[in-house]
Length: 141
Image (cartoon, rainbow, N blue to C red; front, side, top):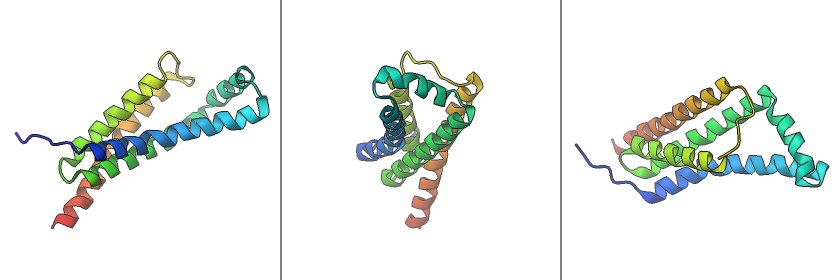
């Protein structure tokens, strides 16, 4: 079995591209609601109301999956070999980041949407790795 040699720059860039936009969106939402509310305690009910909307949650899940696809794709492109392994590693690192940053918070939507979002993110990260691998393969031949 061939050993996998990870390129840490590929992992770091892929991780950044898959997680940073989600944090930026969360910051923008909080900033927008903060402009209207003032104190953080005043804004929290608005954030909860926004996140209790299934439509808003679906949009956020799809956006997040798109960023994961991008992160997996870029990591695979930069990997120069073991592309799928790089995209999976980016997915694991990004998922760990998500779990750590949301520790203690409950998912505001229905539980099926939470499970669906994890499935969609796993598929997106693998698709990104597959696309990156297929394009790298075409360039090598």
